[in-house]
Image (cartoon, rainbow, N blue to C red; front, side, top):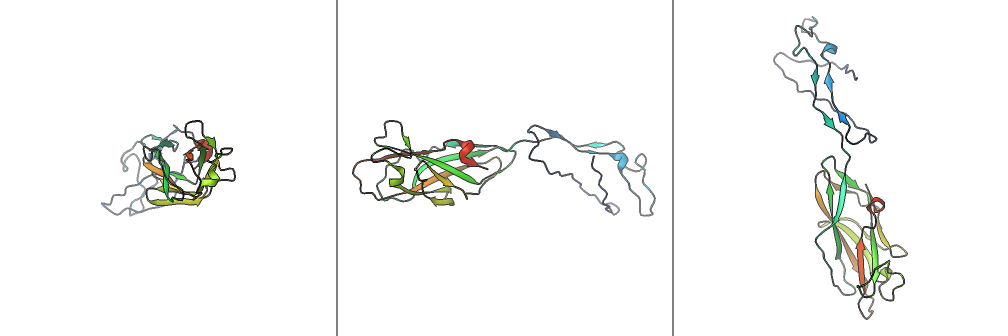
Length: 219
């Protein structure tokens, strides 16, 4: 139990709306039910004359006041591929090309702040086979040869970037995103990339995704 020892005064005819708030530990299991009970027998009150008020005769109600159940829930965040953009064709040297977008859906329990995000990158020579992480080993679809940098956006708001691909071209790491998503919201994260002007003949194909959300997304 918790004992509140601070004094407060009510004038005649005055009403105070009192509430109990708590700070929940991160280690509390999801689904834990919390409730608060006002123990009427512990109330210590007196009138303006200094006479003590009796719980049984002067204070209403005479029984404990039990609050409603409050259920602790874990925050949740679910990423899914957005409907746009779809497959995109562009030319060498084009900037701000939207290459992929994700919807991010939070649960009702709490808002979420994404602090870092990794975007996986792949290359392929003809777009018909299995894409290779980083495009390494392909003759004309190496990510580092074509993708100069990428940035992340929430709508038109820049969240982080531009960031260049890793040395092996397999990912782009955004470590300062600080993307705040309110509870019960569906927001869209869009990756826009700047492509180098390689003057290379023929077509090259690239793809992007979240490799493993548990490793690539930090909240």
